[in-house]
Length: 382
Image 1 (cartoon, rainbow, N blue to C red):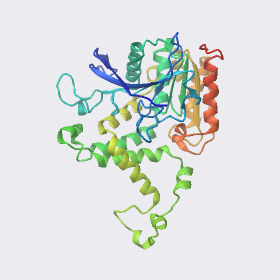
Image 2: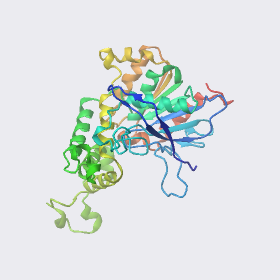
Image 3: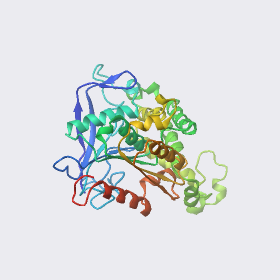
């Protein structure tokens, strides 16, 4: 399935939760499948921290260009594009086409850099709603996302309850724990204390704070994997053992990676630093930290979710310690307190938080079964 990235320009200012606003911005997006005659089969996909609007399919002539959820979305796949019109949107502040810190401020003519306004999950949802308005889609058959994308799906059900029939929230949470906020802060400090960061205006200096980005990615990557997966993949294996080098050549080195897990993390950090924007990382992790729909209800999640009217599917994974199953169960309980229609699957999978991106027959079966129930056999929306 070959796909093409699209972009839409918005001249009117978008009010933000911070009290600021942003105008003359672009949103990058992709679509898959065909919108039906009554425009009732649209499914919006919300992305996580380092993903984009390229959700499925491949770019013509480009090897290894599959979308980040290509195993989930496409013809005959769990989210079947022969039944649904699927939309992937790149969030404001990201670095994959939508307006972000590396773009030009329309008022100053200078690159935004650190002056890009603070954005929240709720701001992203409002921007996505404007895109759907422009596409002529009033009601979504479903909104779906994993991790930070799941927070957006939940927020959609609260901000626009009359526009969402189903919300699919995967490996997510109603807010971040203090531990999660702490991980984000350490990663941000790694970037902000990089000498090449220049207070967020590194573009003007022709630099990229790659050292900070590398460390931030390494910290994040540790939290995405389970202890079992790390031990199975790497254990305590030394690089020397895989390269035929004597252990003595590697022991006590202060510069070289000695263990295979070290080499793996350095590789992930190096790769990330080549394509991700440092200010975008700061913005998106802050949006993660801020999300808390129960804050306005003195922490009462049941009261916060009373606005939701859609049907829900929540999925969690047993070894996901960053967004543990108990966090999904908090959402399930709050929805049941409001007598909402909720399905919940807790998948016994070894992969940690990354499980929401991987092939697991039980997980894929749950999603396929749920979306089969969203559309009736005749093809009319349920």
